Image (cartoon, helix red, strand yellow):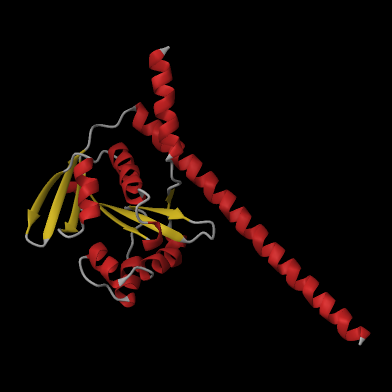
Length: 223
């Protein structure tokens, strides 16, 4: 009974901090571009290792390979991407069991654990895909990212202004595969709910505009 209560409490804590993370596809390129362009020059510098211009960001987004890599996003109620992660799998068969992780979070949502949750989500999927080593390349001043890496047990090596983190992943099992399926299903449901809510809000706005037009028309005709 004590073990069951402890397990229930652990699961409850886990889902209380759950954040809907959805897999992105090529249709989300405009939203991805908008998110990255909204980053400050300093955040662009930390994300890409240089202060990327809007044009460079557009080139990056245009070259995203959704068939090979995995890109995840966290949406707000207006279906804007507020945080995203890119898990890049090696195109070289020799390094097929390796992948690289990159993340960006909107300034307004810092300190809520989005980066850590995106990393956890990426780790589960990479593990299920047979990745044995997850690699993070970051500027040494990117302390939030390096903190996430160290907390996960990654080995961090610093060379001047840049650091590399290496996280060895365990072999996938039933638990990791089921967890990923649940994550994907709940994230898709969350997105559908937000999408329907946005459509309903747009419908209400349209109806209000029509009603206002009718009122103004009546007022003019009565004058």
